[in-house]
Length: 550
Image 1 (cartoon, rainbow, N blue to C red):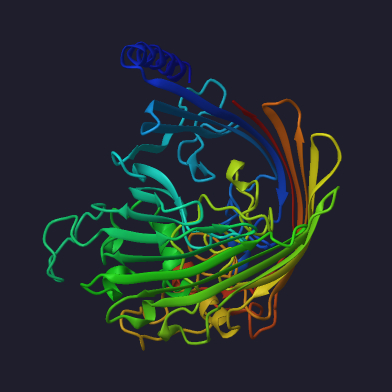
Image 2: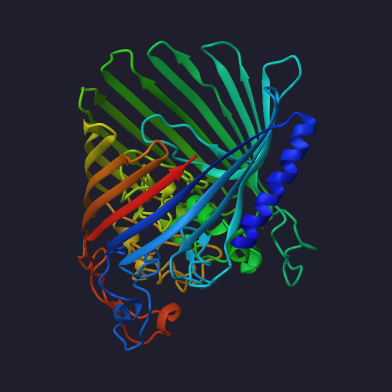
């Protein structure tokens, strides 16, 4: 870290001298974030993988992909640094670094926290993890109002009620924005999330030769923001092509974010399927269409609404298709001391047939997404500042295949610089209970779908162990969530965030859904023993963040 600080200081001095010669205005912004948190019941399951099998083998982590480190208490930190070189109002360049997250006491480079390497937190450890988040230039086409942004940049789909519901991530691409008038503008983008990550097959039985073939994914988006007095609306759409080798055929050379994207665009039941067993030589086609609006004309009332439909089609492999929809609505009333509101959402869920693909809306990547509906079950309002991660239902899957209704009072303030938000949410799943049997391995496809492995793929899935994280709830499963969050502005540049949360899960533990013992499976224990039905527990958390920004 000392070497890094010295290097950055030297770079700033050099750049400063150059800036003076070329009249470049350098702007520096940044933030330090410190986090301290207590959480229990992350996986909602009392069993470890070993006790789930009923044998004596011990496992360090609990039976859930979301259990993280397994500790009840954790502490960590992260530093964000933004550098901007402004030549004029028509030309600038931006660079953002993220240093950390560093879990205090952790110097194990193999452990990840919040998607970042957790090295550098142990005593005497000098292995500070530095990541470039953004690197792009902004410029206007001469003598026009057309603005272009080129490089690695944040891109997200719009949503005035729930927030982004399809795409919110840093990605390489080009964004073009044009303002027609004070009321109408247009934004279009081309993003390339993945390309040339595939290492090729060991043989050419499928006709591929060499590496890096048909392994690119490209997304093209269009948004038309319209703004009027007391009303704004944004229709939008996005299309994409997904190469059959994008995510590393035969499990080799998969891109870093590949698992999260596969979890968002593939049916959950088939996510363990080896691509070479089921994909074709053709590109998969993806598209989304959405509409979001926000009405403040009846102030102090406010109304907002989101609606999205999406589809991913894989040629000659319909069981890998995925299509579905998502809607959300919000209504609130502004008072002097706070803003009470009611909101809800509904996402289409899987039917009982795994051979016709998934009926849940596909999503690309939601790493940078946030919603004001929750700070625990969903990717919460403060989650982008979090280091250890507190969204229990999974950032990629939080809203698809679920429904929810909630009431809240936000911006509660009786003391200057101190604000609170209180939420109560009731939510549940929209997936067929029959799919739970496939997820647990109680029911197999037995080779009736091309490319399936006769049931030897799915037995390590569960309601809380879908690949890449996230909960999988059926129409028989429900949960209630309580939040009490606080924001205190200590100084002009220093704030303290406190998140308190509790989730009680009513999981259908009958033999027909998640409960009941069933035969052991080859993927777990070579067919020996019996697998216990899941046992669930409640989840609680108390997190505190200190954020110094400049």
